[in-house]
Structure formats: structure tokens, C-alpha cells
Image 1 (cartoon, rainbow, N blue to C red):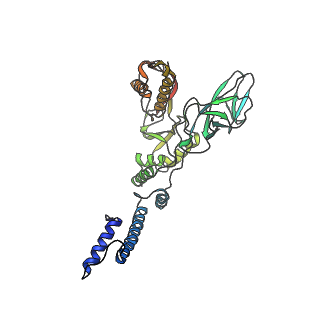
Image 2 (cartoon, helix red, strand yellow):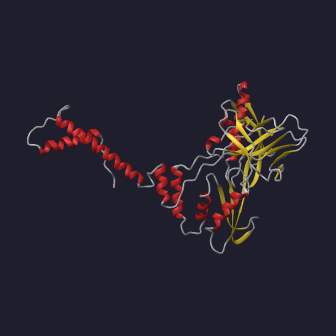
Image 3 (tube, rainbow, N blue to C red):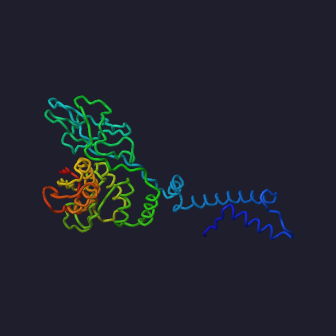
Length: 374
């Protein structure tokens, strides 16, 4: 039912008309009269009651509830808001003298130049320099710099810092002199917004008691924010035809989701998969895109700024590509022109030393490598 709302003036006018119509003589309803004061007092109470009714209507429907009220509404369905996701990325640990072996321990802290964001080194057995026995990364003699994975201590989008922002060692590491991040961090997310929470609730309703791709997708999306996935049916992990089998490829934006995340996805999919089927959960196969291009800039004094903007725009675009999405070489040209108004020409564009688009397989993802702007 649509509630007909009135403002204070309308309430006073309607009350005055009602009182006058019930009287046998003309009433004094001028400003300052006793009867006018009584009417305005009643109108104020009616306005307050109207506001209370609106508050009740708002909190009794998921479509209009917000914040804690929406959380309470969803809790009746055993649904909770997805928490914030900590930003992560690569930080280069470097030293001036590379004659001795140096260990960067897991948990070592680095910080942005303004001191607002702190990141901790995380374990990644996929990095060749990782030593599980020493719980850290070993910089062998002769190695002057090594890029290591880090994660923000405080979850949320505030951890999405720009390239070059991480420049301080928050905890002393013998043998390490400097740190920096060549690329911006982009995968930090704030707690799930109300609109996304409502959309996920709709998927929750649609996926009940169904062993469908939608139900599997909902189970994956319910794990954490920022997950991308593809579902390939009737194939095995090598892409060969296999009836009754499906493959789920999952990425958290890094291109290398952790083993614990893959295990969590496996458990979630197993709870909703069709009976009699088999499946596999795998990370995407990463194709690194090394981009080379030449730009002409006018005026020449803006070249350094323009080159930095072009490189950053291309890296952000490539790293945001979803699983299975291609990287058109023409898009690189468009990004270069749009990155800075001083760019007057773009030429010599190559991706991995070729002038062709990159088209990954259905389970592949393209990530930014070296972006060389000449």
C-alpha cells in the first residue's frame, strides 16, 4: 500500500479546514491564536508519528532497510554481510650491497610514506626464494632485489595504494635497505555494500534446492568479495571432453589464489554439486602481458608525467581483465590516448613482442607484466 505523506503546512491546513467545517461560526485561526496553537501542536505530533511509520516500513523490508537493519533482516535467513578484503600485491625488497645472504621473514612489515597503511609479508611457496624451514624468503648472494607478496594489515579499499607509495620498512630487516611497489594495489575491498548484499540475497533465493551453475556460482560468491570464476561443463582440467565432469576456475584478482582459498571453494562447490558428478577447482593459467609502445607528447615537458599515466592506465586495465577475457592490442592504443591529454600520437605497440591480440583459454587470465612506455 502506498503511504500518502503530508508536510507540516498540509497537516495544519487540513486540520484547520476540518475544525472550521464542524463549527457553526467563524473560528479565529490566525497566527498567535489559541486554536491555531492547538492545531499546530497536533500537526507536529502527526508529523512525528508519520516519521515513525516510515521508519517501521523501512526496516521491515530488505529492499529499503540499510546498514545494521539490513544485517538483522538477512540474519533471519542465516545470511551475513561479506567482510572487507585486505589489499595485496608485490613489494620489491632491495639492498645496496648484495654480497651476503639475506632473509626477509614472513610477517615483516612495510609501510606507505605517509604512514597510514601497513603491509605484512605473506608466505608464498610459489616464489622460488621461499624457504619453509626459515619461514621467509632468502636473497642469495648476488641478488640485489626481490619482489615479495604482501597483504594489508587493515582490510578495506584504503589499502589500494598507488605505485611507489610503499617506501618504508616498518620493521628492521638486516641487509635490506629499501622497499617499493612497482604497481598499484587494487584488490582491497570495503565490507559488502547494501546493494550488493541485496543482489546476493536474490541469488540465494534463486539457487535454493538446485544443483545448477547458478547455485554453484552463488556458493563461490558467498565466500568472499572480489572472486571471479568460470564454470566449464563436461570437460576435465586439460580441456578434454568428459561427461559428468565440470571445472571451476577461480581467481581473487591476483592470478594466484592461495591453496586455502581453493580448498574453501572446493568445499562450497561440493555442498551444492549435482549428485553423480565430479569436479575440480583450479587457479587460472596466467598469461603475462609485456607491453611496449612509443608515445609522442606535446609539450615535451609533460613527457614524464604522461608516460607514467599511460603505464599506470594500461596496467590497471590489464589486471582487471576477468578470466577468459582477451586483451586487444587496439585497446592499448585507446588507453594510451585517454590516459593523459598531452599524448598526441601512439605507435609501435607490441604485446609480448608481437602485434597480435592475446586470447587466453577459458581458464586463462591476462595479467600485466612490464609496461615500457618509450
